[in-house]
Image 1 (cartoon, rainbow over the protein chains, first blue to last red):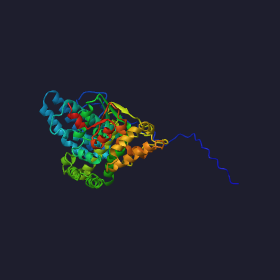
Image 2 (tube, each protein chain N blue to C red):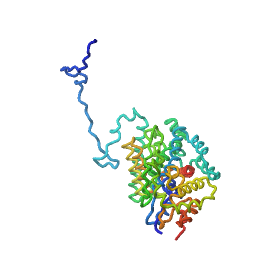
Image 3 (cartoon, chains in turn blue, green):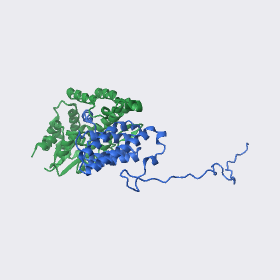
Image 4 (cartoon, rainbow over the protein chains, first blue to last red):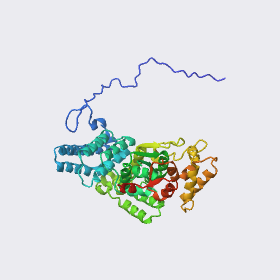
Length: 187
Length: 277
C-alpha cells in the first residue's frame, strides 16, 4: 500500500507580500464635467476621461472621438442658429457635419453599432437631397451622435433603437440603392 | 367595410421595402379603422423575405466584397422579369447615394482597406441589411391594430448573430401531432372545395401544390395535416380566414382574386384602395 496523500490546505500566518504596500496611493484627478454648450451639468463626462488610453489601444477610437466631438459641435451650431432663424448658417453647419461622416465611417471597425449609426446619419442627411433639416431632426441627430460618443461599443440592438428614432424624426436611413436590393430579395 | 386583413406581401412592403411600396401600403392601411395581421403572415415573412435578407447579409460577411456579393445575388435571382432584374442590378452596381461616393481617396493612406470603395460599400450594404432585419422583426407586430389567428405550434424567435452571421431559425412550426390550424380547416370543408375548384386548372406550380393539399384535406378530413400542407396552402389560408366583413389587402392580386371570389370575399391592392375616394 502506498502512502495516502492528504490534500489539505496549508494555513500560513505570514503577512501576504504579493502586493506592493509601499506604493503611494493613486491620485485620482477630479472629473471635469462639461457640456458642449459650456454649461455645468452633472450628466456628462468628457469622453477622454472615459477612454484615457483609446489612442494607444485602438487608434481609430481616438480619431472617432475627435471627429465626433467636431461633428457634435457642428450639430449644436446648427441647432442654435436654427433657433435664431438663421437657416443658412444652420444648413451650412449640417454641411460640415456631412463632410466628416465618410471619415467617421472609416472607423467602423470599432463596432457594428457604431458603423450602422454613422451610416444611418449619413444617409438620413444625404436623403434630404439638400432640403432643410428641421429642429426636431437636428435634435435627433445630436442625440444619436452624443450616444455613440459616450458609448462607441454600444450593442447592435441599441444602435437599431437609435436608428429607429432617426426614422421617427422623418429621416430615410437606407442608401438609395437599398430599394433595388429589397425588390430583388423579395422573390 | 372598414376592416382590412393583411397578407405577407403587405407586411413585407411595410417592414423592409423603402419609398413607394412602403408608402402605398402604409397609406392604404390608414384607410381602415381595424387592420388584422394573422401570425401566419409573420411565419411566411420570416421564411421568405427575411431569410433572403439574412442570406444577403451572410454572403457579404463571407465574401467581404460588394462586387462579389452582387455577382452572387445575380446568380441567385430567380425572377423571370429579366429587364427588372438587370435594371436593379445596374442600380446596385452604381450604388447611388453610397457613402463611398463621398469618401476622399486620400483617406486610403490613413485607413487602408477600410477606405476602399468596395469595402465601404460592402460594410455599408451589410449594415443596412442587418439593421433592416432587426427593425423589421421589432416592428412586425406594430403594423396593424390587431394580431389574429395565433399559431400555437410556431415559435417567434428573434433573428440573432452567430459567428458574425445572422441566424433566423426557426422558420417552420413545431407541431404536436399535427398543424395547429387543422381543426379550423376541418370546419371549412365546403370553402376548401370551392377554393380548390378555383385553381385546379392553373399551371402555376404553387397553385398545383395548393390544389393538391386542398383536395387532400376535404377528401380525407381525418388524416393529419402536416407542416408541409400548411405551407402549401399559403394564400388560401389568408382567403379562408379573412373575416367576411374585411378586405384582404395584398399586392399579389393575380393569385388572390380567383381564390377570394370563389368564396365571396374581396381582395384589393394598396393602389386599388388608394384610387378609391
